[in-house]
Image (cartoon, rainbow, N blue to C red; front, side, top):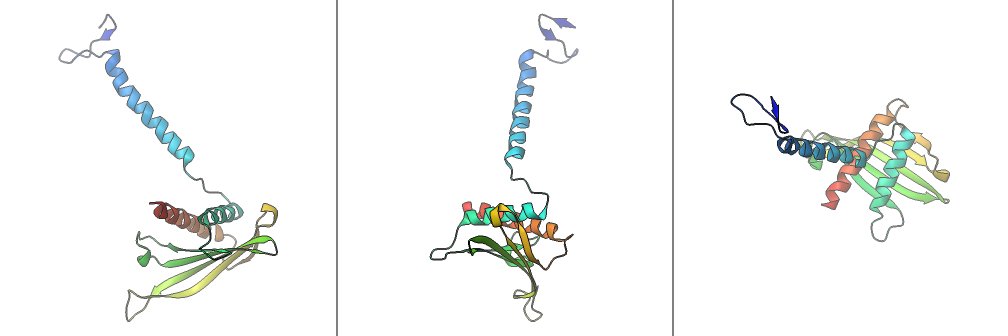
Length: 170
């Protein structure tokens, strides 16, 4: 039954008014808009290896060189654990200009615990990805990863770089 702009909710319930409906709609609308804005502002992952390399270079270059160095070098860790000491891969990234062309070298090294002391890890099976950026193109000059596997590795590296940047901002 509807009377004077109010709908009856049932025999034992309070009437539903426009104000009570708005009290539910406004928060839901605000949550939807803010979630959409967060999705749009979140860094997007490029789909191909060249785009991933370009994005890794941009993110690392934003961190800048250490004082007194004319190149950029940064270290990151890959793995499932939140604590870097428990991660199972070390990533070293070096960005430098060679003959006026930016060159980025990414070394990914597997870390294995020593049998005598599992808290100590040693590097094993280092792999390289070397690329040049002439006129904003991407040329992979060396990759120890197969063509069909490099993309997945670069996605993990990009995530590790972004995670470390977030932690350094805190």
